[in-house]
Amino acid sequence: MVKLDILSDPICPWCLIGKTQLDRALAEIPDHPFDIEWHPFQLNPDMPAGGMDRRAYLEDKFGGPEGAESAYAPVLEAAEAAGLDIAFDRITRTPNTLDAHRLIHWAGIEGRQTAAVSALFAAYFDDGRDIGEHETLADIADGIGLDAALILRLLASEADREEIAERDRAAREMGVTGVPTFIVGGKHAVPGAQPPELWAKVIAELKAGADS
Image (cartoon, rainbow, N blue to C red; front, side):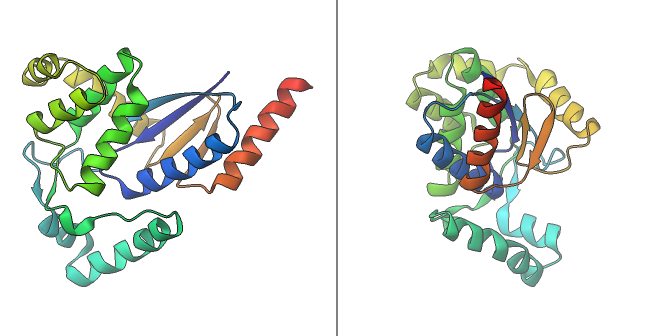
């Protein structure tokens, strides 16, 4: 097996697109060698704990309504090309994602990490849910077979908050400036949402190397 570490944030549309493209490649090559692990990277590490109005966030980040529209045009184009219908009109708040990353971490302990990532993407980009809310995260946990009551108790505590924040900081110190970032075999970084064809080529090269 080859470790595929993925740095991602569940409110990052490029991360959703990147995962969708990777999933398609892996579905075409079911005997792929990847052992996947997801790692935290917050797009907005300084976001208030309760999040903020999404329109205000985008306009502040991109310099007004026109800047926000311009910045998101490539996202919409790439999502459509990937066959995704992202319900941006349903998303009213941009959350702080530290707690969502805590959920991904706990799901990983139970072998449900990718399921958690998928469920968070769906909750945010399909349903427009606030994935910064503890009740929402507990409901998502329940949907992937985790103990919702336990997750609520953990979220109400300080459990793993500093560890997740430190892992986020460590990624930035390594030079990661944006997500998704894929690290193949602990050595080779593949930034951005890559097409399935690229992943098919990577897998073919890994298999050829293993057979040589």
